[in-house]
Every structure is written in structure tokens, then in C-alpha cells.
Length: 192
Image 1 (cartoon, rainbow, N blue to C red):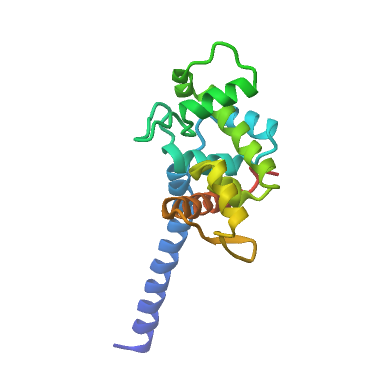
Image 2: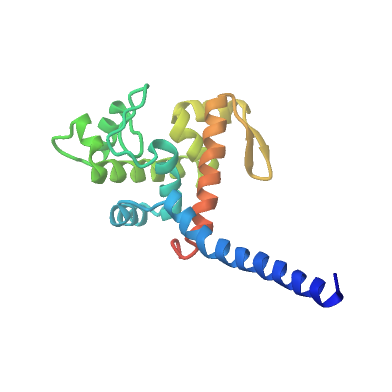
């Protein structure tokens, strides 16, 4: 094979690789946006902003909690998009002075997102704006996380939680943080 033929083949292979890279770069963000959607955007935006939360943070919690299934009920009885239990929902309804609340209302996106955002904001306030503790408390409960903090049962590294007494909560925290990172990367202007 001559030098010209080798250079021609090399150029063709380089062109094919470059074309594949361009196509992948163009398609990948759209595919990822499909995997990390933003349903109920108006509601999430309104209640996130009303409660001083980042929209991407709320979406990370919703995706981790329910995968955007508005009527899902967990084995532990948590309901809706943000997986709020009947007990917590009733307490939030009293705090927000929502009249005629029933647990079935938690299947309604507007009620669920409103209550979930309020509760996340409450937990952020309760734990001095520490998102790691607020996320852990959203999963394990405020009382459990308060006990862990008081008794030093949480392992920390550089302001990030590295170990929790409940493995499920530790995995949940990792999951929410990873999803949050993807939302922040895909929608960088969302919270500005």
C-alpha cells in the first residue's frame, strides 16, 4: 500500500471518528434530558422559589423518591411525587393551615410538591442550611438525624456526610446527590 493510500485511509478513519463524536455530542444531552425530565415545572418552580430551594434540588428529590409517578405509594405508606407519609402530610397541612386536607390529596401534584418543598425548607432551617442533613432527615426522619448529630454517629469528610447509621439513608443521600449533580449539569441556568 502506498503512502498516499495510507494517508487517505487514515483521513477517512479520522473523519469517521470525528463524525461519530459530533453526532454523540449532539444526541447525548437530549437523551439525558429525556432520562432527567422536568414534569410539573410550573409547580416545582413556584414552590421551590417560595421556599428558597433550588429547582434542581427539588427535581433530584422527586426523581429519587418517586421517579415522577404522582400516585405511587411506597411499602411504608409514603404517597405521591415527593413521597410524603400520611402523618407528615397531616402535620404539614396543619402548619400551612390547609383546610379539609385528606391523605389522598397527596396524590395531587400541586399539594404534594407544595408540601414536599415546604418540608425540605423546614428541614434546611432545622439543620442550619446543611443540605446533607436535610436530605438524610427527609429519608430517615428529623428525629433520627437529630439523634445521630447529638450522639456523633455521622461520619463527616469536608462538610459531606460519609457514613450514616442507616445504610438505606446513606444510599438515598448518595442517590439524591448524584441526581442533583446531573440536573445541575444538564440545566445549568435553572437555579440562576
